[in-house]
Amino acid sequence: MTASNKPELILTGPMMPLIEEQADELFLVHRLAKAKDRDALISEIAPRIRAIATAGHFPVNGALMEKLPKLEIVANFGVGYDSVDVKWAGAHGVVVTNTPDVLNEEVADTTLALILQTVRQLPQSERYLRAGKWLEKPFPLSPTLRDRTVGMVGMGRIGKAIARRLEAFGVPIVYHSRKPAAGVSYKHYPNLVAMARDVDVLVVIVPGGAATKNMINAEVLKALGPNGILINVARGSVVDEPALIEALQSKTILSAGLDVFAEEPRVPAELIEMDHVVLLPHVGSASHHTRRAMGQLLVDNLASWAKGGGPITPVPETPWPAKRK
Image (cartoon, rainbow, N blue to C red; front, side):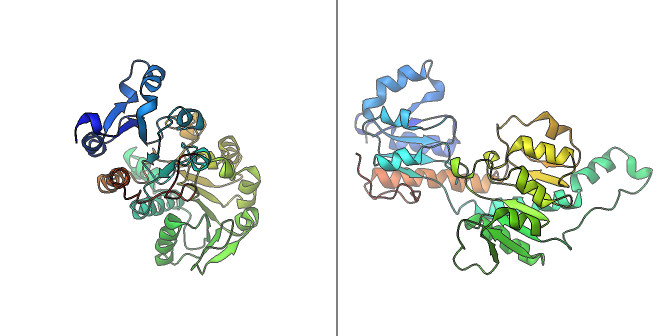
């Protein structure tokens, strides 16, 4: 396939070599990150673009897609795709893909590690040792998982993987979602505040976007209570960050373990200054193994579409086959 007859693709920002190298084989790639004037580049190539590959570098919104009359597919790196306007895409016959399943186990592993670090205060105890304080006296006793019930906010693929691990720890599990999940025996709470009152650890694993923005708010945190711990491995937008900071400062809740934040990579100074929280730099799926699998699935979606076979993992809002409207 020569450059002249390759379909043309926009790469919204730098991606792992695996993606960029294979994209160059399949497409004539236009890299926005290297453009001196992004708007000028988009205007120049707009009539020819049929695909976009993105990792949330900047929003793939309706205003951008509307400029691309031949656009057929947006391939998103990651299971979350809140940076893509799927409502507009679905209404205009543009299919959006993501990279589900291949990261379930990694994110679930990270979640259990974050729960244990937060509940047992393991990072604090390591800092205590490194500071030489163990020579003076033992580290104080920590809370435990043994007397806790975990409430899952969301029970999708990753939520189920987290719950399976918690079962092995002998921890009671309940969950909140819009409707009961098929094949799940845990108690379902239709009301999030009611569940927060009944649990000691709240694990958030729901998609980002307008529907879930700030769903973990001051009311939920108050219901979680002074022995409660919040774990967020979803999206920063799901938690009302100022309300969380206030709840932690006032001891409305005991602690939090956070892998995601509202304005990444910017983390509020108030959180960084707190010693009783555990903060991770959005590393839920960040292993070589899992990121390679995610990258390959993104490419496989594009390759399958380019060959006429249709994408492998279209998101529910944009089923395949799609017809440009």
